[in-house]
Length: 366
Ligand code: NAD
Image (cartoon, rainbow, N blue to C red):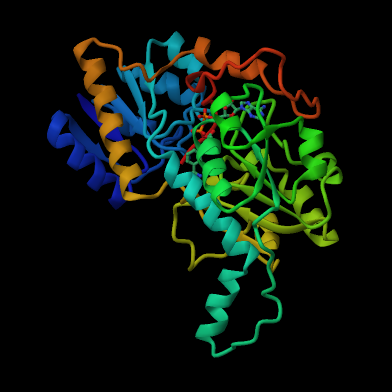
């Protein structure tokens, strides 16, 4: 297929070119983000390949369809940046990479927890500056601390397994509790109980209307003073203005983010020469107990290689007239939207042990 690859970075190109040795598609690499004023660049292509900060709303879908694009192959699991209904209506098949390395994200999550707790980001700079003082670097043992995991899908489960090795006491909230996770010693609780009991809360659920701002002022008011919050999932799960207030009051003792509500204007670009005009983001950077990485949790060699292979094998399956199994349809998004409810703690639905990860991946991903 002739595929226009948007938002291409050198590492994307390398992974896709390697995978393409097995698939033989015609790839056009474009640095531009896919949005209304760049959709025309897909003219002459059968397929478009896009990443997380491409904006594939209704207008873009129509423009792509008018140009004859038949396939949208996402290099991500998340698809909340795509108007799937419009794509379906216009006959564009949307496929994604449902899982490429949950280990990459889980390991980065735990890395952030340790780094922000032990202030490794500050220690690194101090030592380079000849400052060997320890004031301001005091952390706590993770052992025996209660960690709450919101969302126990692929990444949440692996995070639980790693944290069990640290001797943490694990709690979880998920509308679809999972027996395997219970085997790691995780106890499912409702959100209010988690907020009241946990020293650390880490987010691994998708972004849906139910989970938007799942961490907001009200949620924070139910948490322990000095709580650590970690978000490697999707920016809008956290109300940034509320967490800034939480940091100022001391309610939040540590905040680690790999994603940010308005990251589309910032992340994946070198803006070190530019003025950052996002005052909310700039405020976050002023706190000594905040550590932010720029959506890099997915960024391992293994993950990039899996993304390249699945992205192109999805296109190959389409070209052969087969289904890859990674298609996104309006039907397979909706079950997730009905589940889970912010502010309405559910605990464990009686007798509901169902966990269908394919039906729960509506969130954004790296
Ligand atoms: P998954 O689909 O395997 O698991 C998601 C889990 O969330 C499921 O168990 C689901 O039941 C649960 N869930 C759904 N609604 C919920 C709710 N209201 N409250 C609590 N839990 C709920 O997804 P995954 O592969 O584990 O990925 C999790 C998230 O990680 C993705 O949605 C994505 O946003 C993020 N992600 C980030 C990066 C990165 O680079 N930072 C990379 C990959 C994925």
